[in-house]
Length: 189
Image (cartoon, rainbow, N blue to C red; front, top):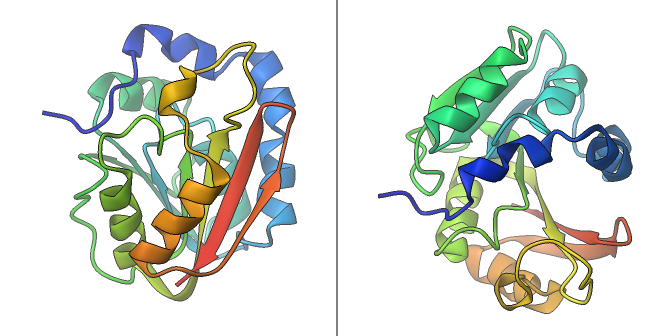
């Protein structure tokens, strides 16, 4: 049984060029100062690789990105996008990745906290994976944006995200609005 409840039939929407342009993923990763050449990154719930591929470019040949998803179909789509050699795909429930403790400089969960039945376990796994001083970035839908997106009742507020980050052990939590529809939270181990 998987932990997430994303409808795989909607996977094509994830890589819509308009959505990709709106998200400005490389700008986000630069602005938070979290990803640098040579880093080891983990994309928890990587899906089709929307964030994985920009992460891989920023980590460079000397870095590595572990792209974790519990869906073989999603990982298949990522594989069809010809990811660079520094991307390692892992089919696993992202609350139990099997990766070693303290392997990562940077962890990402993009639009996953609201999809998982146990967001606190996902954050605990991210904390376990990070080296001391490592950064977690969580991108989510704004709970007050009603035009489209996941149902309002499953969205994670910034306040709830902050509480969950604290319970998982993260320090220096901050949130910021990112787009009209999205916000992010960051925390350090």
